[in-house]
Image (tube, rainbow, N blue to C red; front, side, top):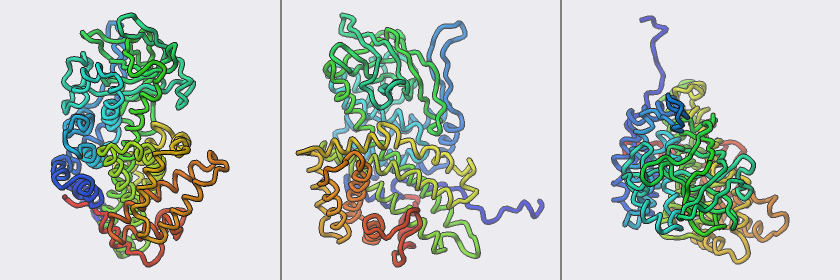
Length: 539
């Protein structure tokens, strides 16, 4: 072989690591909010997530996007979507390990934390399949507004069995759920929806209209919004009716998206489509908001997973790649960049798992505000972190084979799903209304770290002044949401993270000793220690 083809100074494949137990911040959060046996129960999933097999599933699912089949060879409508076998491996693993609806039937007091930790670790493999996993998880509390339907279908939604294909959901051992809210003319303004529903006289309703963005259209069940005489209402729409007849669910086309390529997102037409009312007529938004609020938790978890996946790649590269006579990881400026990204990752992870613990504890008021704040901030930070991690790899990171371009395309998604930045920031303001129980709950959470660091106390004072100023609140909504998020993250790091992590976070994110781009930590911080903590291990 010619000497010009000798390969040197290339980074070895990132294999054989555990993104769950091998991630110090995530493992500690799991034990903190649950216990050691909960972490141990995820060992098989963690080992698989860091394996060559799982990474290959992720690559194949992304490179072979779903295909729409509207008709069969005879001209009959079938409205089906075909997925690569790797997609089904990813889905089967997620559902089988309890990452979909299983926590709602789990008698353990830590079911939601277990699921969140597993979700954050597993979805680093491939993020697109997380969408139907999330919607199945989120459908359960919303469906309980129709107790009879919930009694019949919840066992399938909480099952650990994944069974792809359109069959009678009342007889299927495992179910996947979806959601249809937005329409062409309204987007997030769902009260502008025009889809109509009329009673059939037998307890069912007929829906006529469309949905502009319905992801995972091969799901068994969908919660959708439609107008009735009483106003916007929520309905359960199955793909297959009791007895096995196909429901009218016409797939017009699949979206050609920036990222999330393994997951099908469709435009759907309803024409006499059968559904059943969930909740009271005219109360569609309050009913389906249960599902939306739960999906927000997964937006935070998913973004934390994307941040962590990018950081893992960057640290691995820096530990094995040399330039200018030294390993990248030993060069001060690179240490600054990696340490800064590590702070973002640990703060995102700590907040995400805390929200899952609130779900376990039934802290609805805390979730109402903290969930929106976290969704706004963590999802907004993700594109910045992924872009910087990609740059650590240089030109190698810009090549598809590295996996970083897939993460980069995925990075903006969760900031758009279930309410884009402005929608979420304004929702934060609604949660801060007079006499807000949500604000009281978050304030109590913040007060637990008061006195731990003068920069934190000063930040709480600034936040209180911001909240107490009624002038032009909508104009300042993003500013308020961001300050709340940073204070929540700091409170968790001050209580639970190593002192070096908490000090660096407070110095930069609260104390202002920080630049506009990652890698601008001040001198004197133990950057090498922060990077060492961020390296994943076999678990």
